[in-house]
Length: 434
Ligand SMILES: *Cc1c(COP(=O)(O)O)cnc(C)c1O
Image (cartoon, rainbow, N blue to C red; front, top):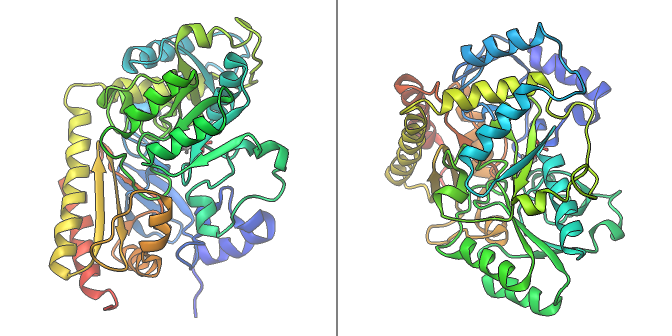
């Protein structure tokens, strides 16, 4: 039997790189089989090293809202790279990107650029602790906020998929001040505040849980979290690393009228290059060094390549009508999946907001997934794995885990949406009957 180029590379990668990958979910642990090694991306498509083409609904896990290798982003990067890749000194690009973020995100008055979403969230909780003089933070079970020690407690897909409850190497001291609470359970959050009066520095939340599958907040839940924080003197941190420039151009905070004290961002704002950011109220951000005493730094922070890609991405995204088109595309796919599942008699829960969508195969009809516990109980991950591999055969690439979301980009036109939905229809007709 001929082995494919991906299989050959996979064997070599496993020798050289832990688990063969540089980020765990890429290893197909949740669906089995050999990961595809990618040769290039163009628009809505990925091309693997064996010459296969896929409509890509992963989009590098969110950043590529314009699609792969968008000409404006490529042009900005070509121009930037000729002028040097990093100076370790201020640049006009940082000011321009900061201005765009502040203009778009209503709760962000001042912003610090970093190199990843992980850096953004870890810096935001340091700042929240420094600002409030309190130690404890609250996160929601199944919420993912990057891989910093303090967050590796009930931390969403990467960890769920591997079945690791927590990570060895994270000391009890590093997580003793991390409290967790079920998503969509406001009374439970109120109980935590009652149990630890005056000790909670911040509550950090993905406004839409997008790393445990797709879980919408119940109406009023996020506003309730914010109100509890205000009442208790804790900061409300919106982790908009996925939702920023994806849920809406003004993030979940704009779309849902939230006013977080701090906001963390990443993914889209780097246009596919490593870039994250944290920002918020000026009075709080002014505690960050060198304006204030809370230390945070980075050799490559705000580097001209990442900022150029981010600026080109946001500028293009802000062109009239462009974002609405990407939202329409997400709606079309989500609705199409829902109706085809109904026709095929497949129990499913589909969600979509902005350019983000997700679906759970349910073990049975009538169950509702509203938090990470119900996601674990009611989802049919075996069915997802079967679906995933059949979709690959049909030339459509979804995330290799049931507990992730999917995306559309500006490059997903009618042809690509039809290809996705035709494949869904074919695959739904072939899934093992339950
Ligand atoms: C991806 C993600 C992060 C981590 O960002 P990295 O750039 O992968 O470090 C943090 N929070 C949320 C909500 C994310 O989706």
